[in-house]
Length: 106
Image (tube, rainbow, N blue to C red; front, side):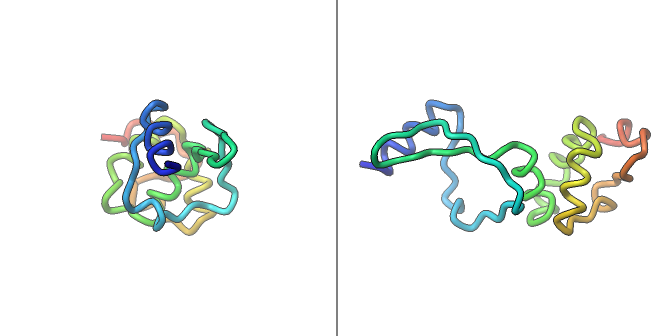
């Protein structure tokens, strides 16, 4: 019952279940928001910045386009998290603190 409730809750909130969810790495300072709570189940989502940091650090090849686009929008806020967690900003063509990064998302 908990698994079917879980899948219903995440779908209703615009998310989808990832079969590899148990293998996901998240930064230590990730924050979570509760989207559902009952006596037997609590469903939380991770903050978007932490999700992007995870993709940039652990799956950079697969997510290069996404991370470049996110860096254009979020700038040093995201870059700092990537750098703090051992990610390679150079791989995404991003230089921390440089305004020109806004033009390099393409």
